[in-house]
Image (cartoon, rainbow, N blue to C red; front, side):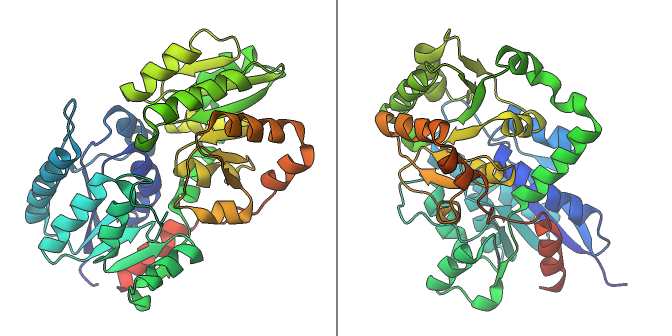
Length: 374
């Protein structure tokens, strides 16, 4: 039997962990591979929650974050420390996912050592280097030298081909976030206690249409965050509507939301949710308001319309399919579009029933096969 290929999977944030744990599981269960995991802990608490539920124990935990750390300081530290792990492990491939600073630094460290990089969720482009910032550039950097591009959709594949990436290195695999959502939904069905922590809120808001909410984008800090808070305040004043908002740990988010929304009867500001509870929030919500990328993919898998509080999206497939709509951060626009979905049953049904373009739950297996044959 051939010697197993050593794969080092590098990630650092909660969204990366969610989208990579199905692949880590697939690699660990496959005799074709020796699977190793390195985390930067760019998110600490939220990352650990996902690792715990997914049963993943990292082989290397760099714990890179320090209070007030700048992007350039984080990038430099990640590049050096991930490089040291690569020198120790000497993997055959490095796998990264998406668009974080960890992704860019991890891929660049591999490139410096001529280790081929597999980029999961490759080819997403907004067309604006400052929206999302710095994620748009992080993706483009990795797209310039990855040896294997796992594009989630045909649109992402076409974006890479327009950038002259060798078409033989680009494969449409679907998005592993759907694998993850199906996995955690099945776990909750087997063990309801994994996601029972929202029961009190479900009882408190019984009979109301719940709007699930997330907001954390760096480019929305300041005026955008104030506008979003004002919109939520207006929306929650309606009878029969409630907002559940797991508030991101970043103080640029927390300060604004606590000042504007704390104490409102129909708004629940809660701590960030672990992955099973977030899946439960998606399930009980009538619709989602978000500036997150992943929610644009996850919510449609459960038939939930998504209003995206950003000016651009690197996931245009959802907008084109009708599962998501860009509404920006203008207060009046957010309120108007939310009310439209609350008041117009046909408009709501059109979004809720639209085909989710992001995957079928078999993406991790496809990527594993590509790594075995590359």
